Image (cartoon, rainbow, N blue to C red; front, side, top):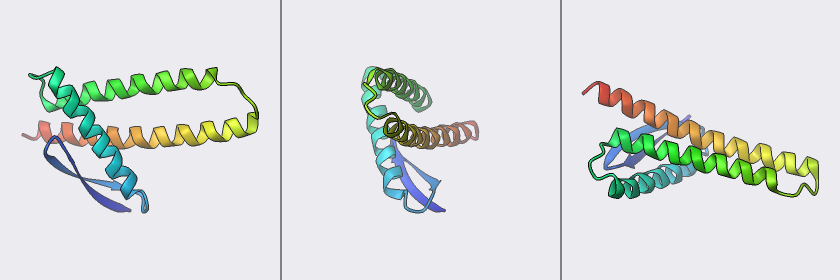
Length: 113
């Protein structure tokens, strides 16, 4: 198990991940941080917790749209398509798990203030 230091909205967090997944986690955190920063421009008065909830909702929306598009793709080789679907679902699941863990940790920290 590896511990990765990530920064989102100028706050540093230590997040655990499986060995070898450190770079992916850093990239996910960077992407989330960029998304939250962009949202903060539209929601200037929103606090970080609200921005993270909005970011999570937009990510969920993106995921649902991708799932709909996936089902519209032609199925050339059903077994190959299933492998790709499982791999994509696993990647998305891992990303959402990391985001959920981050949001839960942030909520705990906010509650402890």
